[in-house]
Image (cartoon, rainbow, N blue to C red):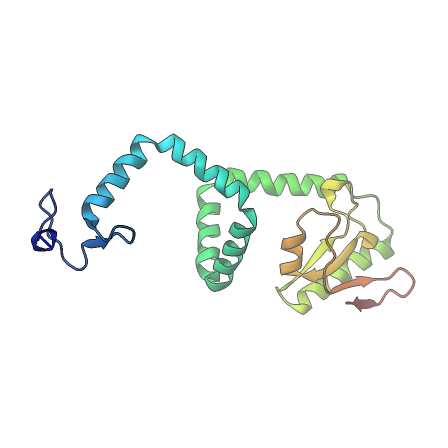
Length: 190
């Protein structure tokens, strides 16, 4: 009863509706400003311990992070594009290194093509462009897993599937388009 008459915390902050936290267990109250200060002091005093605990939690909850990231990217595509563009502007040497690595992988995996094979690759990329930016040309066996940049190892899949697949061998896209060797016409499969 006497505690209800106290209008300020021991540090002098007023107990207003916005600044008061009601403890659910013992029905006491604390000052939010003081709580924030204590939490901040604790964090800085135990920074490395907290970071290690967070890294461990993140490692054990990768599916949660992946789901949250996917949801955020879907809800904020323009922010994500802006963030990637900002990163690319600030890290041109890393962008160039990644592009050079990709080109080197591609060149290393290119065998000499017959004119017919070159034509098939060109058609696949053209067809992908006709379908729109939500479609990617994908290497069925990824280049970094010793797949070849060859018409028999290329398919057109949804961009979302391509990003999920990354360099995995076991991923099967829901929908894909390949050019068969015998027919030379695009076929679809689902």
